[in-house]
Amino acid sequence: MPATHFVYLLRCGDRSYYIGYTTDPARRLAAHRNGRGARYTRGRGPLRLVALWRCPSLAAAFRLERGLKRLPRAVKRRLAAGAPMPPRLAQMIPGAVVARTGRPRTRG
Image 1 (cartoon, helix red, strand yellow):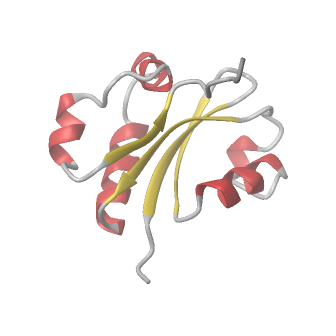
Image 2 (cartoon, rainbow, N blue to C red):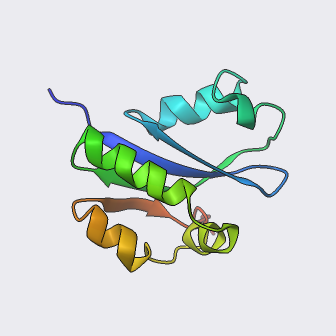
Image 3 (cartoon, rainbow, N blue to C red):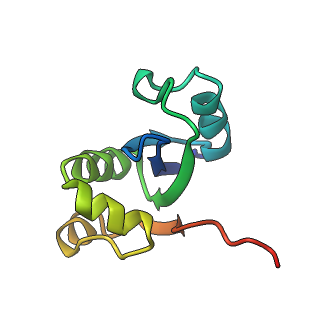
């Protein structure tokens, strides 16, 4: 079975953002939270997954990751709040699908 490719946006405890690539978002988030993820996220907890995009290919995922990392902080903040991807990026990676955005919904 072919791998599914994801690009994700984490909000760190110091209010910074981290963007990365994975084939298993739950496993990758657990690794970040356990200090086995990226060096940048170590000691910056708590970490919260705020956006996740499913990409049609590995190449598309890497293009999206690179494009998102180049965005200004204000745009990353809007993406974390659930805003759509900027049109330039959406055109670059037409097959990217939002898998999750914004704050997790609470039951109540």
